[in-house]
Amino acid sequence: MDKLKVTLIRSVIGRPQNQRDIVKGLGLGRVNSSVVVPDNAAMRGAIRKINHLVDVELAK
Image (tube, rainbow, N blue to C red; front, top):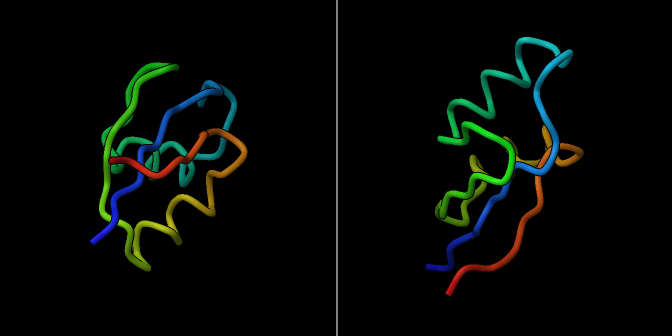
């Protein structure tokens, strides 16, 4: 199964609480922090809700 590397590129300051919760739930903390998550429908849905805050690429 493929994996996605998600990097937080924008701060969550001033963002709605649900977006903050998604960022925290993905395991992202500070700006420029990255996590590798499985490429499944649940993760893609979460990433889509915060796509303006993150950068996504395929992980190896």
